[in-house]
Amino acid sequence: QVQLVESGGGLAQPGGSLRLSCLASGLDFSTYAFEWYREVSGNRRQWVASIVRDGRTNYEDDMRGRTSISRDNAKNSVYLEIDSLKPEDTATYYCFAERLWTGGHEKYRGQGTQVIVSS
Image 1 (cartoon, rainbow, N blue to C red):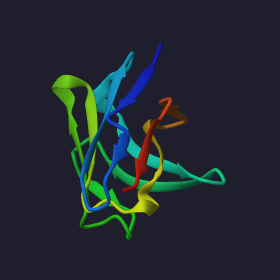
Image 2: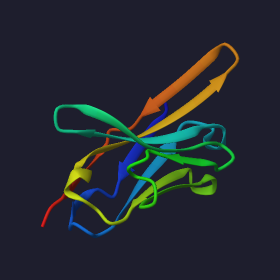
Image 3: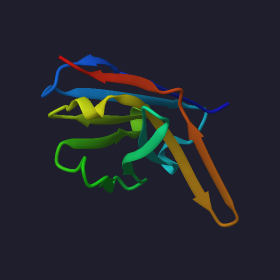
Image 4: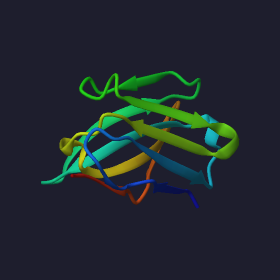
C-alpha cells in the first residue's frame, strides 16, 4: 500500500522559512517523480514545484527563487523549502508521487500539511 505522509507545516511568520517533508512508503521511490501542490481557500489547487527521477527540478514562476524542492532516495523523502514566506503562501500543501510507463500511469497523493503564514 502506497503512503505519502507530509509533515513540517504549521504557523510561520511572514519573511520566515519552512521546510516541508514527504515520506513515501510502499513504492519504489527512485522510479517516481514528485510534485508539491497547494490548495488555498476556495479549494484552488496550485502546482508549486516538481522533481523528476534524475533530480531535475521545476518551479511555478511565482515560487521560483524562494522555493527549493529536493529528494533523498536513501530516505524515501522529498522536501520543499520555502523562504521569504508571504501570507499568500497560506495553504494546505500536498505531496504527489507520479510514475509513467508505456501504457500506464500511477499517481498518489498524501493527506497534506497545513501552512499558515501570519504575524
